[in-house]
Image (cartoon, rainbow, N blue to C red):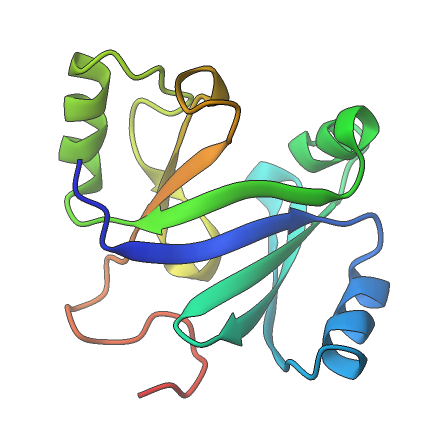
Length: 147
């Protein structure tokens, strides 16, 4: 597997609006995007810190994965995401190498990225997301004016 860089850290929160206010007022960051991903029952907010993003995640349904995470573990870091190229091939190679997958094929995620998750049982307890930007190489996918 070839990881390009840390794409983002996913942080589960109970109240997205309160969390955004904290990140903006106390940490001095600027939220550049809020998005709902209905298929994942989540609402997200993004911040940029250097080249890495912070993704705050609020559940939109009591049976959503973020609601279940918070119920079991409380608010906090829910996953680490790495940027990759050739996501489908990376998943196939990982599975052939004995890594347990949550997603056997890429699916759509926030910010237009293709995503897939590796099972925490194979990653020492850390939910690991792989992200691929389907946009042209060299273009920024996050609408953050970093170019």
